[in-house]
Length: 214
Image (cartoon, rainbow, N blue to C red; front, side):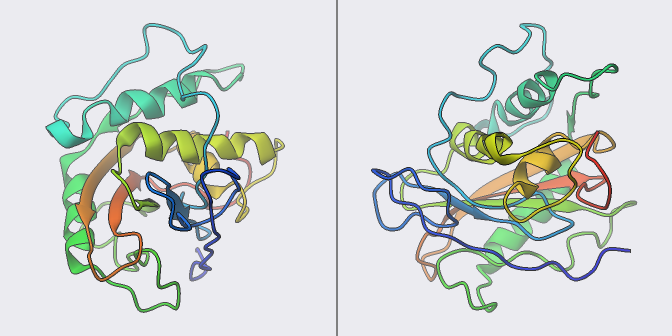
């Protein structure tokens, strides 16, 4: 059983490319947050785009809405770059997970003390046949699939196998959690939150549930 997730939020400045949780006010910055049991955490520049060096035959998603086009492919490119004896299975797009993400963004909930970014959805597993993980990305500029996955994947630089969940690398471990098979994401804006341009991705079965990710 997962314990209630801890909340974590840092600060990013574009010019410093720090590993934080929020934009810090620079246009186009980004952010995220990450509790145990979710795959969400801090933002940042992220360096090279996810997918650099990945195999060319990585599958994309079927059923993604236009604003999320490429999200599944970006996730699968990150997974394809993990060097394991048995390759990680690619994720497929799940509209039910995406609907849960969209419904949560629409609430613009911000009550947990981190005033600059959307709260995590404590009821995200409701109505799904498994525990649901969650990544949250926020920006003062446009929130894009490329920006979100690039930021989450950047945590790989701080990850050492076979570590499990940590607040520093939990976005990345959710991306590459072997038993996670589906993803669904949504984007929206919450004008009541400092960095309101938000992408939420939900994962099933969710990762960061104990042990190594793969």
